[in-house]
Amino acid sequence: MKFILGTKENMSEYFSEDGIVIPVTIVSVPPATVTRIFEKSKDGYNAVQIGFGVQKKQRLHKAQLGQMKGGSYKTLKEFRLKPTDTSTVKEGDVIDVSTFAVGDKLQVSSISKGKGFQGVVKRHGFAGGPRTHGQKHSEREPGSIGGGLRTHVPKGMRMAGRMGSDRITQKNLKVIFIDKENKLMLVKGAIAGKRGSLVEIVSR
Image (cartoon, rainbow, N blue to C red; front, side, top):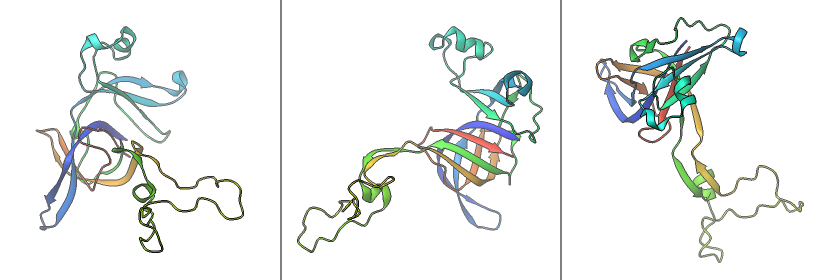
């Protein structure tokens, strides 16, 4: 199992050797340090914790510094290991983009863009009502939320509300190109989130 953290940069195009244009997301993947190994016999589960990014030590509590083994990272993230997964990393090891190879299938998780409070047309794709039939200002209204026979709103009724800022996991993404010198990875397709969003990358 391979894993690392990165930040989303932007989308671009990659031209393959056959001349095919592939839409890609550029992910910046600086080195990460293994800060702790969790074992089932001692902690109840198997996992690897890594530290990502650089943080001023003055901004961290003493307990956080102790957990980071003297380092000062912006983010600590655990990657759970299945019983069938094998990992040879040890505390203090550095993981970088060279861990991955072109063609690896990835599972990528990130937080999508927050869009605030939105109506049903944008949030759920409702068509809205026609301007005819005597209405002028209700093209984007949800319409009836009852059922005719009920005296309550059914559970799960699609309505207006907060949209975005959700954890999105995308599977079967593919590594197209790896730039070891600039610590970049090109992933086929789109990854959820804005520029600078934290991205969790796993390959099994």
